[in-house]
Image (cartoon, rainbow, N blue to C red; front, side, top):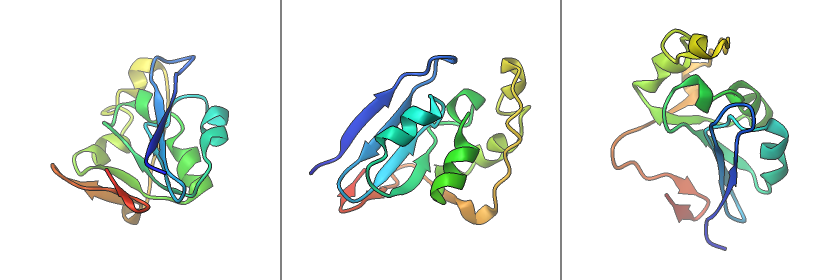
Length: 123
């Protein structure tokens, strides 16, 4: 099986979540859509969460997903400060409080040209 992609369209906030998966691994991209829908689509072990950028509307369920699947967050180094600061991730503009704090070991830093393994497939 090659990499499959499923989209979950956000209902309350216009932000979509994508599930990238194959028979052996799953990545959750921007965990903001309905958490119940995200969980329904996970059919193989979650090996990471990929954040396209660190605005609050792209990580509404980040804390729950990391807790549930005990997986790393794949992001650019500059995103970490924004993830953990509601002023910088603009949560306050959306009347949200994310209050995200993760151990440094939770982060897998991506650089331009980084290749991510999804089981035997590469992204």
